[in-house]
Length: 256
Image (cartoon, rainbow, N blue to C red; front, top):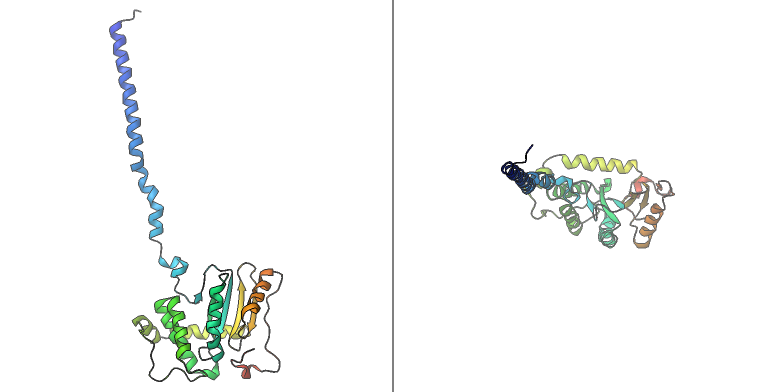
């Protein structure tokens, strides 16, 4: 078989054309590939942007109402009465302590005492509804406002005094029975846990699962020592009982 120069050139030209076409196809595919896969790349960001706001801890409307870092290891649950003068005195002390100790946050638990009714429950309803309409910050501001204005010991707020800038959402809440259910539930839970006086603190450790109940306005080093005890992880849940010489009916909000 003879090798014909003309046919060889044709074959060479054909092979070159095919090779060039293949290279161009690969180049075109490489150029177009990012445009094709771009939607998949941006899809996770789109899902994150459309997640409900409630999934964020800072957007959680509560209750339970918390002050401090949501991810803190320790939670200081305070059983409090808004007509209790000792709770009122303790409020800025505990707030300052939480600000100085980021390892702990503060959770409010309503315990209106019978001796302070009906003012205690009325004020509890108010702060709950302000919180429902405005979130955690609004709730704690309302508690601070009540303590700053109440006459205490069951006398309640001065006649005619209304909470400033009460929102329509908060007013709608006040016109309903939603806050009553929550307040009764928290008061019943306090009784189940043996809490009959205010203020009282229940300390919880997220890591060990242990809890410690303390009566009275515990401050400074004593509160830190209690957290250290929980952190040790070798203790059972402690629920101290009230002193035997003080029946529950007479304990009220007396400090321990």
